[in-house]
Length: 197
View (cartoon, rainbow, N blue to C red):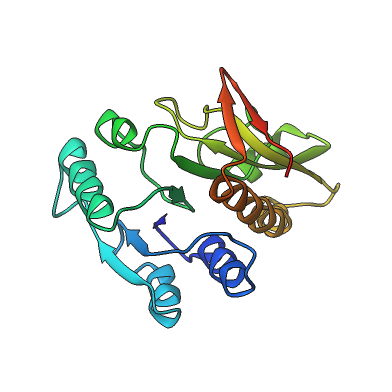
């Protein structure tokens, strides 16, 4: 798992693994921020951690090459981006083609990028939500795995909406990772087909 901050989606996956719902194991957490709270969550759960920072590797390709090297040392099958605030280079994408999942707090393709929940409030939409998708070269653009709708209330702020969406992020990220681990996801162009059990 790659993180940059609090690691609440990481915690959701840790909890799911402990309940036997993940059908896989979290073997490594990498952060691009040394002070990321999610690193402590990983330590508490007994998961290996690494940091790869911009100050160590200021060139994006070299930064991503280092992460890829670490992931390969751990024989990682799937990379999960959970609040990881960097755009991946081709170096990374080619090493883990169709094996990187991201969770985003909007109903993609609407409201890509940062502060998606605030964008939704500012645009006056009635519904927002969250999306899991495979990562490609375009930001928040890869084939969609799962989405869920979260109504936007009249008095919502971006922060209030973000908190409600986050609960759904946890749910669909766990489900998406579990589906991948069960080998039930197949990409067909822009669509992700989910094989029945």
